[in-house]
Length: 230
Length: 316
Image 1 (cartoon, chains in turn red, brown):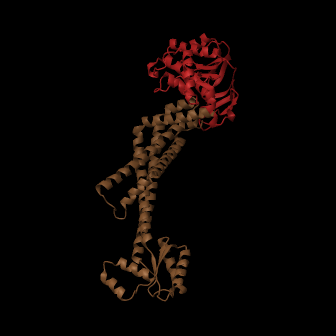
Image 2 (spheres, rainbow over the protein chains, first blue to last red; image 1 turned 30 degrees about the vertical axis):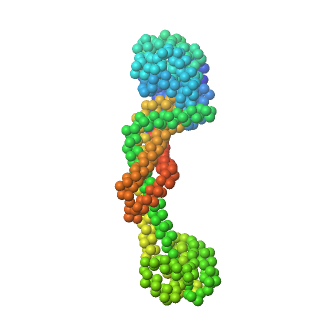
Image 3 (cartoon, rainbow over the protein chains, first blue to last red; image 1 turned 90 degrees about the vertical axis):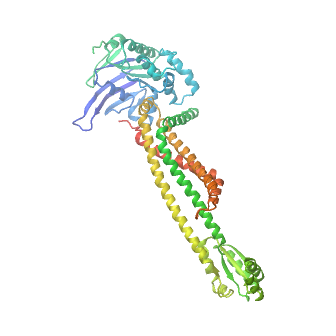
């Protein structure tokens, strides 16, 4: 489902100031897996996700997601790739002038889904993330946890096979953080592959899932049901 | 993407463009003001040009070269000459007045000057038979003269023939010259204003892109296509063009109403206001279509360039 083969991403133009953010990392994630990527700030987690969503290109190495080889992906086909991957961001990235329903519907509107289908689908997804009844609320009227659940609803409304969550609990208190994680687990039970990055020790240890630790741009460990100490 | 989805997406692009236009109205005012000025100059130039052309056509219609025939020239010779002239591509049409009709015409023209009429009658019709040759356009007068002065034709005519009204040609030449100069000034002014207008729209769209950068980032990350992101900006600037065209035609319309009420003028120097107003009314829809087409063209071209320049779609 997700394959990274000796992927390196280097910033800086000249050889002297080039610093690798990721250094020859190889990761293989099976369909329906729930994988947690941990590491301290600056370890390379965000770079990894930016490569997966093709916000950036690797300096070297191969990336294949859902059968799509990134080497062969043209710029004009990037939107098609992103439609197949759901992404949740630490800062939610909700549109402030749209209400909960409209924010979720937005993901469907941009791919040309009819209004009728949107009216039918969005409430179902809001139900999955426990936001039923809050369709008309504006983002500013929601708690951090609720906003993040709107973002999750938006990420899954197109039923992607892969969901990437970049520190989705980073801005949340422990109770709301755990609400969000429970929603991610639920989505994973429905069959979606989930790739979660976090440096929240408690969440990692409670989840008991496969944990990939990145340190200094390299995979330091990759173990199932691993414990993590931040 | 299925056809239905494409149509839905297109509808959404237009809807978003319209909403963005309304949200962005304070930015749009400057762009539209310049576009209104540009289109008004364009419209004014079109109408002025048509009016001058009409004036020239009217005067051209009145100018003719007259060939006065000797009394010895037979009717057949005269008719052959008419036929020959009618075949000449420089000629629009030819009229022939034999001696009797030429006298009648002379009496009619000089009915206020009885002494001239009496003198002509007493002299036993001194008026020669006359062929009047009307040119297709002013520059053909020379060719007609050449045709009439071939040796075969000269011997059929009186010594002063052929003649034409040189003063009138000079007047026409100066109008034609003025029209050409005005047309050039019009074209240059329209181009200069169109460029200024395009630059202002370019900046307006750049500002709009800057204001919506967060929204654009989110759209991109959610997989919106390039056209879906760019489309509303193009629709927005097409609306500038559309509304500016309507405003500019309203301005010209009001100007005609004001001039006809206030001046009751039939002409303003060389510009025949009545004709200009009539031309505007009869060509209203064509002029509006041209205005809208040019307004939309300026708007969309500048926003296509702006979105290409500022919506970077390449990944690093």
